[in-house]
Image (cartoon, rainbow, N blue to C red; front, side):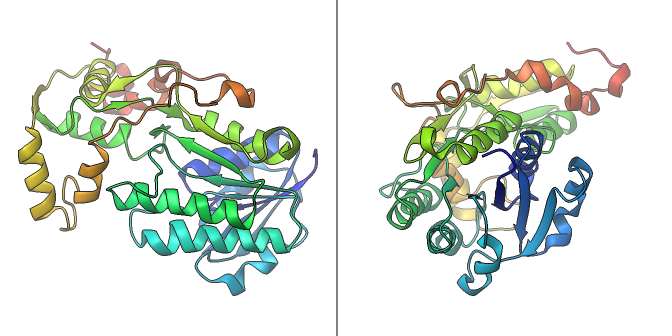
Length: 309
């Protein structure tokens, strides 16, 4: 499917920029679908002349989707949120999959998450699981991608903790024993590209995407501190205290953790033992140490002139 036309919903977001980059490098033509296309215009710099276009579309409004998928060979849905999850993760995913099926699109890729389960106690995990089911019903040969925590220069995970470690001499840790398998955003981009451009090889399959290393929340924080030359005192917040804090204050703007995020921390975020992953998609897993130094340097005491501990 070289030179295929691929519509990417949410292409201007954090993961989206890596998906779009991978598609462009593979020679595909890309149509980025966003509620506000101007927010993704920065992607033009990655493309050759005429290789990328933009269209206004809202996954929660089915009437806006037809023009976004018309003539496309593949569709990738990356849209996700921690707010209005039912409308976006379930109804929105269904809308996009139905529009793609109606347009005769050959390939559909749905970005989900490890922990997606219609029976999950967290709204995020539950709606991701229900969204997968809705996509499968509308587009049975869809490829489902379930990444663990995604890291990269623009992420809201590693950067968030690095900022706290830079600012606080004493850092509380919630869910310190919860395990993650952080996956590089670039690898997720290549995985989505591979799935979209090879429906015959990857269609109808669910893949769990994780990096080469499993780390606990406590180990991730210590890793960040070591790489940025910081030495804060880490203190584990007892689970009952963290749960009460999330319940009582999690709904407030700027709260350190929401009730739903706390529920997600009750389960490890790692690949299932027999899950197909990056290797099955032909993508080598990138270690955090291989790329993170490129942006974590800004969190060092003296910037790029400061040495890591």
